[in-house]
Length: 146
Image (cartoon, rainbow, N blue to C red; front, side, top):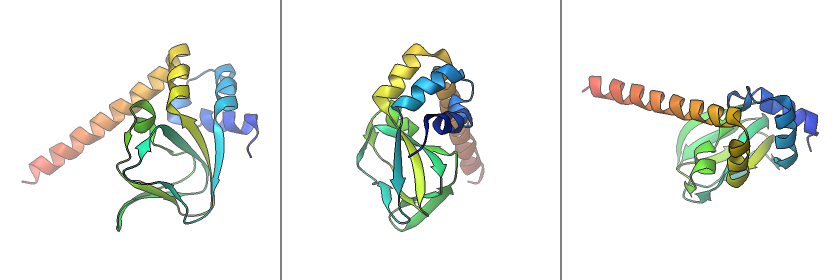
């Protein structure tokens, strides 16, 4: 179990929340859950309804679609933020590569934080813009290869 101050330090080190004032991060840390997974545990199953986002406090997680490995993320990585904003079935599965500690933030809590703090909203918008830019770049690369 992580202490509130540890959660605040983790949140501060994540791009989405890096510009949020510390006093508000303390409030946020009190409503974020700490969850533990053993190596090999499935955290998210593809197709399940997603309503929360996760921050890797310690350890590594892998993303996969059936037998296809899609990537690995380590400490301070964020995943599931789109499902926290707009609950939809999860597009991929996520499992712990090694024992890991995650911070779990429910979508409703995220919306409450966004309503009361423009910096949280700005951080979310920046992440969404990054996704859009990356997807446009990928589409452009794929189109130019044809």
